[in-house]
Image (cartoon, rainbow, N blue to C red; front, side, top):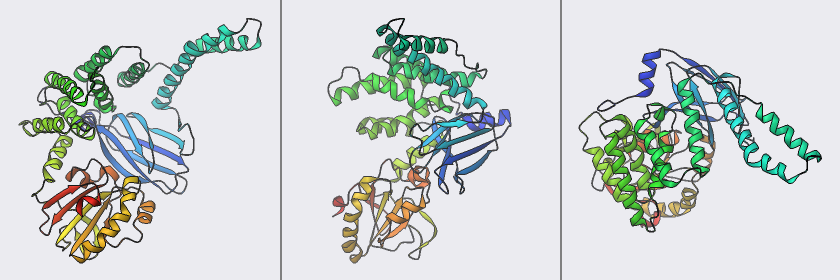
Length: 428
């Protein structure tokens, strides 16, 4: 794996040269957007933004082969399926409290049967066999319990012949065992580490790298009682892991891609910067996702010119951020689904009154995907509003290195960064 940058989707596609269709029906989600994503090098990649029809249906053709996880992001929530490079037909209902996805046969039905059988066996082993001890053999409920236990004993799931799919099932079961406290902390950390070091690209394609990585980091904290001690333990564990996988490999770069924002989001900024510096110092070919993180972090620094944002149509006579003529510009990344953003809107409106009088302009970039709540949220605002309705998949999220909302960036008339914050009060 050393010094090879594996782009899993393209590699598998060229090798198998196949295609498949996806047919989906989402009840209760008519004429709504869906972001369809796959995994490449351990990170999600947008395949397409689609709209359901008036019956909640949508169809998508995958022109090249793909074996791995496909995720479907809805306006609220979402679901996932597994691709074995064969046609997929599914139905789900967003009003179903169990959020169950029904499949018309295929590998996903097999996977679902396997997991449901595992759940039944767990029910038998940890509940029914204990419950039956509370009753006498002549009791009707005792006999009913024994009948159900025998029924579960005789259940069998159809064998999975696809090695990649079996890997996914085994890995998911193992992650479940971690949560069931079947192993101690050191054992769990060691098992997660082995997956991160030894597994093939199925780890990335099935979106499992993030699961095992977060597990590895969580259990590396050990008995640390302070954040400083936790940071030392995490850093030691990550250094050990990266030494084993090497940062000039696809696996090493996938790990860097995940830990840099993960650490920053949890307040370990100094450690995040350390691994960002390691990424910046790489002289080998760099994966697109890691490069996007490097570029995003480097683009938004005080004194640097911020990247341009091009609108799909003129807004207040401007075609882009650079077209906006103002003494200062406050670029606001927000979303209608973000409670903190909505709470800031009244303060932003009040701030805008004086800001505009002084020659300033607000350019609000919404990380929305559903036009209806977005347009409802911007009613009554007079500044420049724009959204490409791609949520976190927007290219401007990457070019600006946005990891949370709201994020506010003050620019001067030459589009140079003056200040970065998350609340209007920071710019008064």
